[in-house]
Image (cartoon, rainbow, N blue to C red; front, side, top):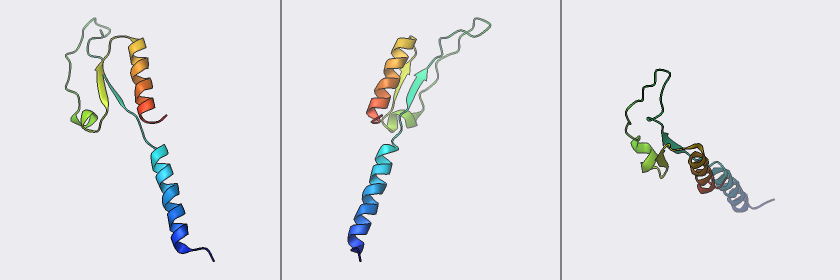
Amino acid sequence: MPDLRMFRKEVDQLRNRRIASARKCLVGVQIHHLKDQNENTSSVGAIPSQIEANGFKAYKYTNRDALARWIEAAAQAAGK
């Protein structure tokens, strides 16, 4: 009969691998300066405190190449 301690250790290792592989990434992007259908722009809002408090980054949108870099950096930080 297998040792119960060994079984528990294996279950813990599996759970830890699942937790590590489930890490998520988040990128906050402020796009307040883009014009709407009436040529109006909105004012910049505050970055939600949870974004930076949890180690995520927020950026002001400049162009799609920069956006692609930010997304890639967040994915790499999450191990994706």
